[in-house]
Length: 271
Image (cartoon, rainbow, N blue to C red):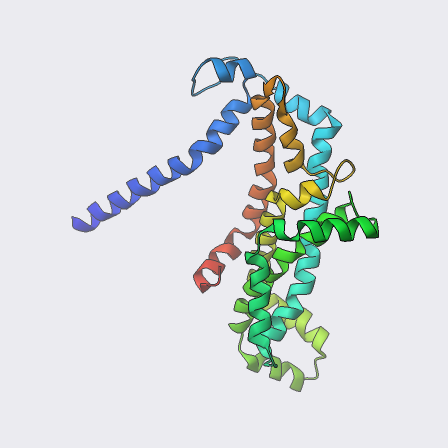
């Protein structure tokens, strides 16, 4: 009886927590189907005057939908570069001991702890000199500062869980390092790669300060485009809610594909 009581209490708690967590998302979706006057005039759980005008505005206005395209491009670039750099670095930290290895590893993590505003002026001056301002590469490379350390930290934890005997056995069998790494070692840590890719996507997708400062027109991301809803006439709440709803979709898709890897990452204690 006591066990059933504990189970029911746990279920009630989880249901209440889920409702609490989903309430802001539901309210944003609800607002996206209303007009500004409907949002400000009355409180309702469902749209009184259902409208798709907000979504039509986003999908027909180039300044809106191009923001999503720009964000997806530089986020994809950042994910590919971050993982390409983090995989060999994490392998080195996992398998070798060298002078200052712990200090270098700690230094990498301090870059993740540093606020992006600290790097804003150096990046601005550097990219202005090199002609990278307002390009996808500007944001993708800037986000490496905090995504590479995170990816190295996550991947090193997964790699340390793989026995070293696998490496030695592959070398005895005549495998070259690239062949061993790509055909044997990488499949063993695919969960770690999925977790690292998810977090690189998430932090790059939601970052605003660097993305807004390093772009202006050609590569302006959706997070910067959303700030233009503020005008002299007030806030365009309805369009902003629709844009916010659409920004959730790419993240939800990524979570769907790596959901099992994320669970394994939490189980290993590294995430």
